[in-house]
Image (cartoon, rainbow, N blue to C red; front, side):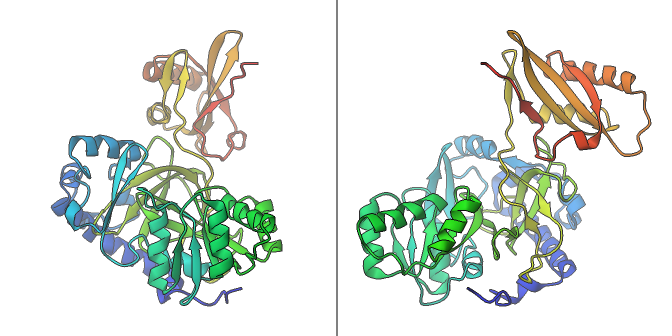
Length: 418
């Protein structure tokens, strides 16, 4: 087990105020750089003065770019949609992900910032590591590969599939570490037992791309493998990582992370579940307020390991809750538009049920603190706005704040077709 006082660099233990000052100074420079060198951001941020974006309040006024926007931008201006500041020919690698969406990898070492997460998981120079993320077209394998090589590890580029061949390689090469999805490690260990091949050299792992359930982590611990996880995407690389099991995921030092209400760009209070929005300081591909589509929440306080950056609770579902009701799609952004007209409402949740063959919409609303209103009059007004925005009729119920679950859901499809 690694010493919890052992850090990748001094930035991990900075005073939070010092970190925030440095991030905001870098943010203004990044916005100026993106406007000048990425044609799409020249248009998206045309009316933004970079020198004025010096805090999170100013950042929250900037538009959000969503994954679906990348598909449209890249179709209109191939290959990278005008979001990159380097020419495709200057990239080290070019990847494709479902969508299709294309991502560049610049030539800098540890381009995806994986080394920090790997170090926190116990990987060190001289380790041999079995990397079972895919190397085919998508960046998954390369994200971890580049971080491992930056640490000075020897990488077995195993990729996915060919389980028996992978197990034989583990038994022969004796890697100390594994990187890959949580479930595939169990497949490999079980196959090793089946074939009577020794995979006991594996004692540490950094996993991503799937849920690491507590029972599975405990099983790995019983088999002598300490498993930590990181949160990464094909567009951004590593966003956050564990240093201690079940103590939250620590945000990387070169990212600015916001949690916003799904369907909007409006930050939510710490602790409330919302969509993860990331601004990267990567100069080659400067994604600004990029909405990941993932739900999470900020955990209070600093990690017990001594790292002082913001911690995320972990992956808590998807933010895209678009639902078809009475033959029409209703989007979280529409519920946000309803609330924008009624500032008395702090949070709301559209619950969709069925009454016989008919869909039924009920907007459950919690009022802002210290709000004094006529509940019936407000409900009636909200019902009118709901119909105007969604073109569908629904009822409105005013509820106590504690009656709305803190799970990031703006639209709950509770219909049963049994």
